[in-house]
Every structure is written in structure tokens, then in C-alpha cells.
Image 1: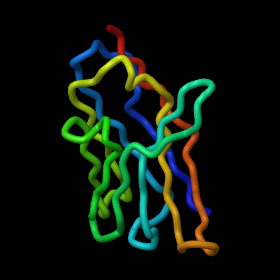
Image 2: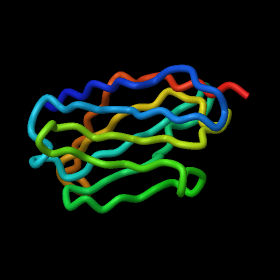
Image 3: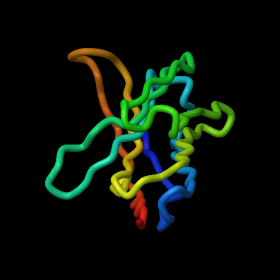
Length: 119
């Protein structure tokens, strides 16, 4: 059971920056992929950014060029650097990690951290 603890959320003005951190309870070498999702009330949780065990990153279109996902294997931590924040980025951000693929995939989630961007 991988435990994930997020930190770094808060209130920021539009155009500002925040960095989210997600620390895993065990080595992320054993995890196939990690990512950040976000959710607003009444909407489905959406994938914002992901990074594979090989360091390949992918981004949702609306955050490309503004957000950067990275990982520090030595610290078992994944980061999400968020720049040029917009009010529509306001959401609860969840860290995700998974092992396995397809029917064998098992997901782990953090409890979430709230990001609020004021206009």
C-alpha cells in the first residue's frame, strides 16, 4: 500500500505560482507512473499531468506551457510547478501513483490539497 501526502496548496492571485509536492511512503522506483489530477465540485476528476518511471511527462492541453511535473527519486517525491495560474485552475489537486497496467493496474491516491486562484 503506497501512501501519498500532498502539500503546497493555498491561495494565490491570478498570474502567480505555486509548487505542489507529493511524497510517497516508499521508493517511487517501484511505481510505474505518477501524476496530478484535479477536481472541482460537480465535475469529474481530470488528469493534469503525469510522469512515467522513465521521466516522460504528459500534460492536459490547458496547462501546457504553464505547469511542469518532475520527480526526485531520491526523495520519493513528485512535484507540480504551476506558473501563470488562472482562476479556472482552482480545484482540489490529488496526487496519484499506480503500479501495473490494464486490468492489473492498481491506483493510489493522496487526500488532496486545495488550490485557489483569485482573479
